[in-house]
Length: 220
Image (tube, rainbow, N blue to C red):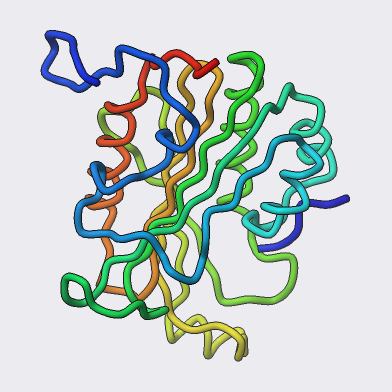
């Protein structure tokens, strides 16, 4: 089956987890992004095995290769959680599709190699063109302050939509950051309407998440 389309301490000034952290604590929370609320439409999605991951979260990828799908299935996948949060125009305001959204994925493996291999797959997929004609473009950016993190700016403009004739698309901006820590691989996507999100904001949220989960033992 293909994946589808499209507690703190330390003395260095950074928050570091000191005890086991559950999978639901390894995705973006209010602590990392105070202006964002739980999305009332896109509910959390969990997966407790590779086949379930493919079935439930496969459409969260752009266009993975068969080899990447096989690697995820045989790479010691344990479980994953995907959550969505949004930033209302006013505090407590209604949910809208055009509001800034955060899409946060945490994946657990049985080894650090499984997590680093997944990180490579996440980043490679983030840069791929759509499998069909579309107006989306992608470019890499450097991520500060998170070891070995990688970033992708993926977007569509009114001009690119007109040029490609992709009538199903509307202009959007997304900033994706992926990183691995121990047996976990993480992906955060901040996006929606152009002008409402930025690379700096994505990096700030990703850094808050990283500081909270880095080095945290697996919950038994």
